[in-house]
Length: 272
Image (cartoon, rainbow, N blue to C red; front, side):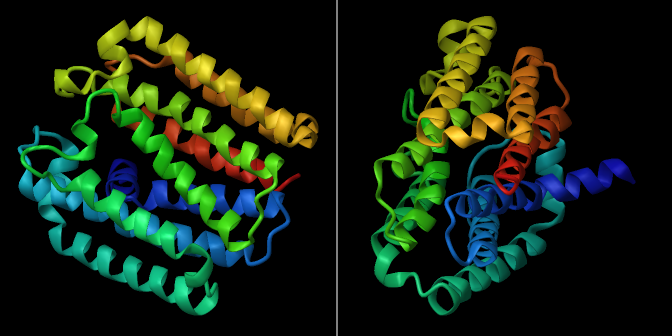
């Protein structure tokens, strides 16, 4: 029963979408923006729509390896289409009618659409994910793009805000490297991921260095976080997970524990 619940949470993209909503709304609260809850709902619904769309396209049109994920996708194809439709409708409603975000974020929306399609759909046998050296950076950029939404919505372009936003690029580099370690034997060699290029041990070092850079930039942009104990707990929790990551770790280690670091970090921003 517990295993089935975890599969439904992670394979449906519900868990990672909740994490995205909490992190971006937590950041909005920290920066004293309005509509914190509404921003979280928009980010949650758009994330679950986009992630499910990308996973559905990959499953339908690419050769996939046997796994519990692909078995779940095969057995829940109509559910995925339902999630895409409902998530998309909620995101559109909040974007246009609750947040009135079109004027201030229309180019952001266009970029989001282009990246979402090109990341999933292969053109002449390639998509953005297949570009050498780019996989991990694309993921970090996409998450950074989510942070940019409330900044554009509130027209807050101060140096400290942009530095705070940009610091999270390194946080996501830190937590994406473990996923590259997990996929070391499945990713095409042309992708040139960090574990492919430098090995697992060095990849862990790169991850910890990225986490260290994230901390430094956070304190330059928002020094009050140095007194936030929950923030420190989230950082230490992430570092411990990185240190213990191995190729043979069970999927729950990545889909629940490492993705859970996003939830913990976002929650810490609500207590600042």
